[in-house]
Image 1: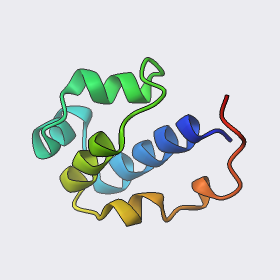
Image 2: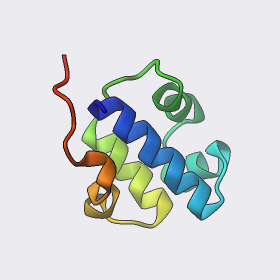
Image 3: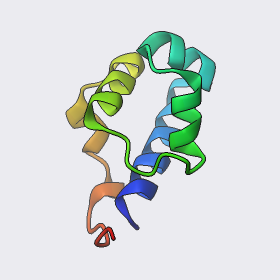
Image 4: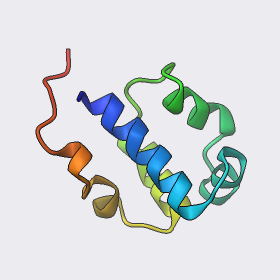
Length: 79
């Protein structure tokens, strides 16, 4: 799995766990819905750490918690 796929899948997992829509996460995090959709649907394959931090704030988790997932273990090399 590459880093983009791991970030996308982790974000989708957290949205499901927290039962949040893209719109609600946008309101909670201050990240525009279009930016969230771009991450989830492949237009933005390299989201910045500041954006991920803002999303974490909206999800009510620490940045460390976002990356404490098996999805980030043994990532393939990104091109």
